[in-house]
Length: 255
Length: 291
Image (cartoon, rainbow over all chains, first blue to last red):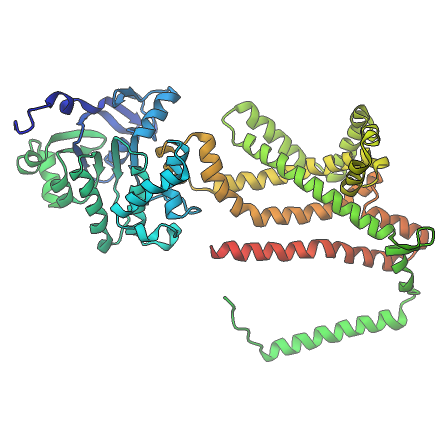
């Protein structure tokens, strides 16, 4: 695979570096056990695995929503450690989309998307509104800007949540089972938006149960079970010739 | 949404029985009570005609009502501010602040208000406030400011007792207010904090833009209820001779012996204050239930 050999150096530089992180909720139960991975800029890493395998927890560690007990995380060269400054920088470079949207119910759709631009990027209301309108149009809910979240369908809310995360111009986007709380007929519209983002070259880490989507959109797939990485491989190889027996067993069950 | 109301024969029987009982009680009071009614003397204690100034002025009861309003208003505002800070301290990450707020709240909620009033009052009014020379400060103000002071806080001559009563009331109401605020802040789902965290908001920004707006809407009904409580509780400061409504009542009763008339009037005056607040609370509750 030499098709993008030119300018390779900046491309290959990993933007997410996770080195043997571990985490336990209580002393006995390890939710993450020695997990390592790299994400290259512009790549999409999809994390799959059975429920309770720790994939959501792993994702939440990447922006510091969960603390890790051991190991190191480097986001765009910044270590995710106890320094509040580093944390803040990372939080501002990493956008996150949650399973149940978590929009701010007391603000309109436009205010939801404007908020972080004004508070974090110190933009004026006019500047913020300009970008927000563009983003809302991109995710197809520009006609709902003045509406409160509870008047929207689940699919619309999740698309607004994506626009809200994008408003900070993040370098990395995290998707935590973004379609799991949606009615079946609304999953497509949200996946379309994520697919567009992938095509635009956004670096993404996606936790999902949508295997067809995972296969289509990802560059690499990471399979987790019981808090351990069982297998990580480029997408085609992962689905066609998985190396591990447990991966094969999991794929047999869900495909 | 209104439920349709159905009346059954049983309702009619019960209502008739209640009306009959009320009628009988009224009949006994009206014709057989050993009490001479003197309702006609009450109005002059509300307003009287000042011959020297040639106009109608307020008298004991209305003066007392106004003092109660002033006291409740300022104590209410102070209790809101104090309560808010105690709530924030109670939820602080600092152990010292948490313990301090917890001790204060528990102490205030587990002592009888009258005891707190005596404790605070004798410390504040006798020891602390004289150091501030409030009356002297006010007497040195220019006349327009003095008039504003009098409108807001009442007679400057008794400013010190008024202020200590106000602080005392606020001190123990703030413990209840703090618990209401705390419950409100804690009731905002954690995922709202997570969403704000992921958007790169700082803690104080999350508090101000995400948590508090949602918490305040939720605590508005219980908070207004607490304000009604405060109005009622303000009667307690009559024990330290603040001339609010209840104190005026005891004085008037002592001089006229018209127990029932005086206390009925005072009850009505309190209702005049609290009932609109209650209506407001139900209005707020129904409004926020919709949104």
